[in-house]
Length: 158
Image (cartoon, rainbow, N blue to C red):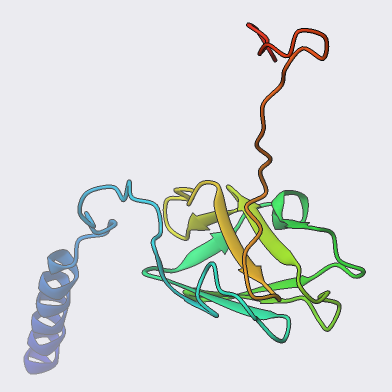
């Protein structure tokens, strides 16, 4: 009987030692992540011309999340059907279908809808631009305004 009791006491003593070795809590984990995700690659490359097909793949250096992407994602010029935006780990896939017009420059504006997965740091105003034609539109207009009667330039123009 003494041998049985001593075995139980030794077992309880060892189990209490093992239990007390484990500390309950969360690991420290290092400093807080304050950096936004970085675009590693886009397929086709950003600012490409003569793009065929309506698929764009965007790859990042870390896991990302989409925040309110239905409200923040804008395609210009608008498409006939809304593109699908899918997230898979460190990648975003955009499918615009077959509704791209020839010789047109498209801009995919994500605003701040892309953020890193851990701390939610936004990428901030990310735009992807491509053209189905041979050149990208500058999306700007330039010129001079003059007075029609005197042919002199205006001093103040908004």
